[in-house]
Image (cartoon, rainbow over all chains, first blue to last red; front, side, top):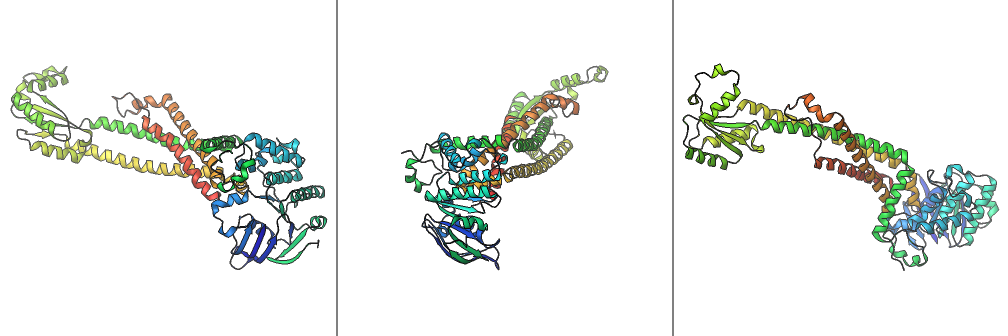
Length: 223
Length: 324
């Protein structure tokens, strides 16, 4: 599903955020990317959804080489990838329903079908009573679940999460983690970048440790 | 199976067999969606849209006011230029056939608008009318004292200094034409004034236009900048550039159209309020009944200019913010 061959990413000439990374994440896998701040976790995720282009190396997603992808083809790749962030990136002047609906509007869905599908996913997230609320009226955990609903409403092949539980308490962390696991059970490949060791320990999933742009350690058991 | 809308990936059509009903198929459906999206955006960002439309209105109002003044000054100048008249005097009153032949020859000259023959009797009549109430001055004046003449009005393009000189030169080459007068000094001064006015107008108009383009495009840029998160999220969920840009461009054009419309309405209100009789007050042209409103092509120009500015402003701003 996701393959990286000798990927190097330099923001400036001297410093490499990622240095010769090779990696394979099979379809349906659940992977934690961890490591200290500045290790290259976010950079790696950005490369996977095409927000950055590597300085060197090859990235294959679902058999497509990102380096050979035309800019006009990038949106179609992104429709198969859901992304969530620590700061949720919700639109404050739109309702919960409208925030989640964006993903389906982009695909050209009609209003009625969007309404049904969005209500369905919000129900799964336990947010069906908040459809008309605006994000600022929600708690951090609720906001992150809205962001997750937006990422998952299209049943993406891959879910990428950048510090998704950074701003949340333990109860909400557990809730978010269970949503990741459910999505994974339904077949979505999940990659979560986090430095939250407790989240990793509780999940018993594959862990990739990054440090200074290199893969330091890789294991299938918690550290 | 339904036809895919144009922003969909043709490669993924097969996967869409199960997909639900689209918001609208084909270009019409797409346009409807984008238009509805633009209107929703305006509603959801109402305050910033009011500010933008207000700024565009003010900027276009300045241009419209300038045009109103300029168009009226041109009108006054046009009236004045009608006074440029060439008169050819005869020492002896010519025979009527001779007059007809001369009139035909003069009418054939390029630049001639109208030729009138003023006989000695006619000249005396006019003289009497002008000196009405001062009859003592007319004692002993007979038609013989006054010369017969041909009064020639010139076409619009031939009323400038050099054009008049050239016309007079070719007029003098016609046999039978003697002394020619055309108020040389006045024509020269008038031409210089007109050229100066046009130059100042062009410079001022150019600067105003530049300022308006700058203000409007920057205002639109700010409204788009304030919503860069939205642009980013749309990109993240896989919207094509066209899909992201279209509602914003429509929004920009609607803002421009609204700005143009409000500017014209405000100008019209000003005009009805006090500008329509300001001409008398300013006494630019005592003969005219005040200022006239902008002609239709100018009105359309301001409205379409607003739409065009909105379009260009949003397109150029989006270029900066919509990157993959």
